[in-house]
Length: 443
Ligand SMILES: Cc1ncc(COP(=O)(O)O)c(C=O)c1O
Image (cartoon, rainbow, N blue to C red; front, side, top):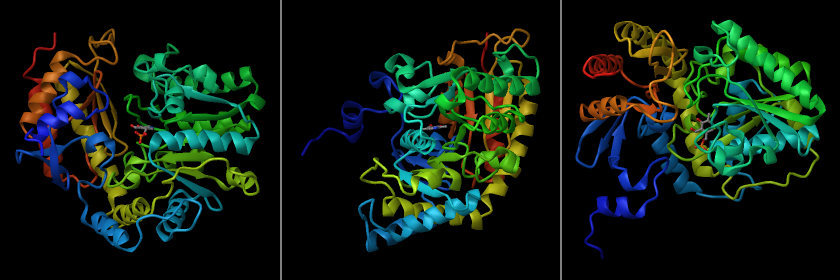
């Protein structure tokens, strides 16, 4: 038996994600409850990012933990082609919540493979075996190879030849620094949606299998203008091209609805959507592709040459069923909408007090973005994406020392606390952010 400490083993043996291994010094987490998690020194942290924007139900939700335990005692696994009660139950719940009557659900292990499978199904159903997929620059759809190809992410673009995966990119609906040169949200949203139509026309609608995009916030911190998604739906529908909504982050209350596209009712309804993260509140790994009846129909009598050993794993699906019940019974979707509006109002007040804040976005639910804008007049970024300004990194470290965990990406703080966060905790975290902003030199 080794005498090496678990901390030393962690640092030497584990390959952590999205970090430089030699300098990684994240805390070791041993437990949690509600919106807090606890490290191995007993320090409690208020989680202002739901870890990876996924612990929507808070940590160790007792009902989900119990459902996993009960399912484990009954049946841990059945092969994916056979039946399992929690899998069927969860598929039915997802079809009900999305209003995709007559559709079908394919389960995956997370978001990346959900997006890859959505593309497979869109291509097979549209009979465009190598059909082009249109995605956004500055988007994130996962870190497996095909998901990296789908993502417009400068951090990973050299690792994969997106064109060989049939991916075409369009500029994002990023009104703050609009790639179309517009000066307001509606114009930027309209221009971005129109560009998708032009790119479909350029390639020929018969050659494009789908458009894959996030309906609301993604990890890139862009929140599309209100008119973008319904217009995008119209552009794709007019041309008979499937629209895939990547709801991996925006789903399950994060943006104030079960699924963010529902903000626009049927005018925003996609043909397929992908889910993960909040699907189990991250209690177990699970992703899903939800197909509308029209997409599922042509697949009914076709051979599906795809599968994952753990597709629809009973333990994960039992967690998913329990999670859906918790969202319903604790009113978490409505709660997210209400607290998201409060959070947005407070972030606007903070921005007014601190010129270093260039922009505040989001607030349809408990999902807000604070962008370090650099010079307000020019909007020139203070540090080039994806690097983080040293003072912003220091602010986050100081907040963590004070027991509040904020997530940063580049020059953004992504505020996405568990939907169960208490009002006093949310207010205290925002007050801390306000105070710390005043303590640093931002030049
Ligand atoms: C919008 C979006 N899509 C896909 C993914 C990938 O999900 P996963 O990490 O479960 O593969 C993420 C993860 O952050 C995401 O935010």
